Image (cartoon, rainbow, N blue to C red; front, side, top):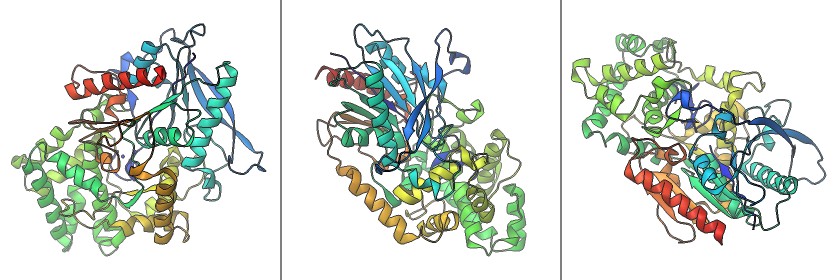
Length: 500
């Protein structure tokens, strides 16, 4: 029997909204596979950039428009004579990377099972441009349903191209948003996909995602309660400084604000954006704490919970507000940012740009649209007690949807959209088999996922001490025993599924 296996990946960390927005890190939430940059070499492996003619609208049979979707292929481990498995890594809310074609846990699995490897880029991200621009009208084709149908069409086409039998078994692997897609693909297209590994996948669409910062707080407290208390005290000191002109000017200097806050202190959206940005400094570090990925800047990967909590508990640096400022300065430095951009109108103007040539077209506008029209996922300050203050409630995020995309995208619309998503896929009550759900205790996104095994046909692996998508990266000597065990369990599940 011939087997086919599928891998998906994606659901925030640069200082400020340009880098960490709506829980999304610029470039996407899955970093590059790694340990050391020099290890990510293709060597003699030829991985070509290819293009697949894809339907624009899968759900309108009278619409014959098509576009070209990018994908990569690696045949190094595949033996057609034995009909080994085929892995397909499907991109999420960031550009597909050729480096994933030779590195990562899925490649280790490919070597073991003799897999043919594909990576399919998500529509509207990277170079996969279905429409001439990113206008709100054209973004109507950016949905998880369309993305799942893209996968189904691609699988069917590859079955034909490689002469695979009708009982070929595909198994999906994905992390973060594509972790959700991995589970939903098995749910919606079980005749095409035989099993899925869903890592860090948020399955519950929730508009007011207040538990995100609850987990951030809990993760920071693994260092010490003193760290969390210092953050809370520093935030309270910001509250006090904002009440007076001298304090406001001190904040300008301490936090290197791009615009003087005394001019905008009475603008609630600017202040909300300031607090939300400062909270994102910590959320981004927590979300990727001590994983084994590589970003464009290795200095960023070296910043961990220990790093920022060492600062927050160092009384020699001054009162807690000065320590908050020190964390902010560190992140500004590693991202080569001269000042902290918190102005709401500037953010909105940037997000409104619908050109493919714009800065925000790397994925920020697209992901914001998906949160407004399908998922919510708004990391609000509604959780109490909230160490980062209560100045960025759910209304602040819904206002962004309205200001960026139009008055239609109001509270009623966003809540209905999230409810619709949960109806479509089942949320945490998803009825599915041959899926393994993998989450890390440090990762805030686990609050919207399945972390306990309820159905033996869809088991959960909850890894204590690990962060977002940690099991998808290559092994490291520093990996926790629980992480090493999780990777071995996943191999066992894959082996079991393809033997069924």
